[in-house]
Length: 309
Image (cartoon, rainbow, N blue to C red; front, side, top):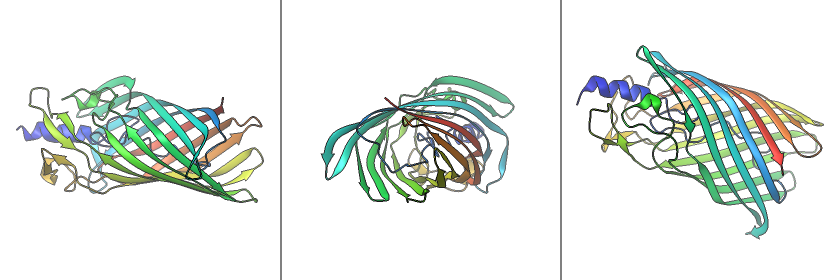
């Protein structure tokens, strides 16, 4: 195998796929998407949510240092439909949802660049449950990520989708008191399957690449003032198992990575929410990434719409 081609492809793949996603097949979930009242299901009915934004970042190695000439810019728009049913199970409201992301990304690497626009990996869950008790609200779910996104084997800079299925248990909780103070968190653990179409170069045979499983969470602390809310939101991600290529742990000899190439990131920034009397909400926020290893690190800007139908 041409080790130079493998190293370059792993460098590219370390930051691609989906909504400015973070590794080969990396973040199918757009980290930081959930914030205000993340653990509180609304009343029965249908809801449309739109997550639109821009991400820009530079690749970081296993020591957290920038990799030269490695940058991503991505515009994204994720469309989500939520249906809260009138039915109860174990005392919780039964809900289902589906998310379809659209991505436009530009990757610069090794003196060249590629631009791609297309559908990302669709997320769905047929079984979401939510409960309420006084100031507390909480939700459990199992999200499923389908490999629907554009994927070009051997051309990592052109890939948007991860090219594998993954399964993610979810627990979200919100505390909001009568004084308007809120603390919300959404905790997730992502179990990944194998991308069997990975190759460092179009001229080389396909290989099995398995990205490591990850714990990640979104969080928010803020204060409500009438229709306005102001706070700090963010996310944390820590990869828990090693990346593997054909069953072997990714080694630091394959690129500027720590062995196993476990990714990590912490992001935070200001978040502002405005709610109308009809229940429509507008959220604007900026999240700056820190403590980044084996991933792209940068800044994410969001506009979020929640519309009861």
